[in-house]
Length: 140
Image (cartoon, rainbow, N blue to C red; front, side, top):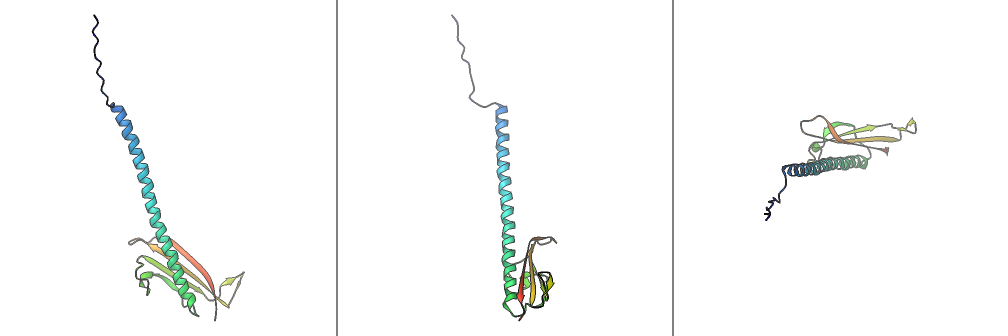
């Protein structure tokens, strides 16, 4: 009479299967982490850019409100300007051209106004998110 032996099989995974699964999982996790980090950096840069645009628009509107646009201003911290104390690390510059070039010739009836605003990380000399706005203002 033949005796049948019971074949014992373990229902687990082999070491190779575990290593392959772990490698695939790690690759997926790293890809997702990379997307999240890149998105967060882009959101921070976008926020700085939008803030710089709004600040440049505000400075330009201040200059346009009066009859005279005032003098040019060299690059200065924006938080030193009245009403802008909350905007640390933002800098602005204003250029006033008393006779801007319009259609190829100088025009004494207008002022040319250029406003630059940018963000600068503390301890860094590199400007980020620089925004430049230009407009004309009629004299008088």
